[in-house]
Every structure is written in structure tokens, then in C-alpha cells.
Amino acid sequence: MDLELVLLANAVGCEVLLRRSGHGVQSWEEKPPASGWWPIACAR
Image (cartoon, rainbow, N blue to C red; front, top):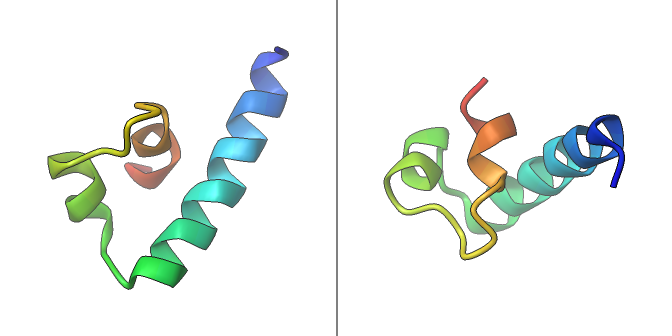
């Protein structure tokens, strides 16, 4: 997959997950989802 598409999907997915879960960025850094790539955008 194209890196730009991955980063875009990551940023959008991260935003949605954070809003749904109500958790902050640190929560994802401490316990990232199974996919392992959400923290890339979350840790901006």
C-alpha cells in the first residue's frame, strides 16, 4: 500500500478511535491496538 494512503488512513482511523474511546494519545502509546500502526499518527 502507498505510504501516503497508510498515513492518511492512520490519521483518520486514529482520530475516530480516540473520539470513540475517549482515550488520550498516551493511552495508545502505552497500549497500542493490535494493528500496531495507530500510534504513528496518534503520537504527533
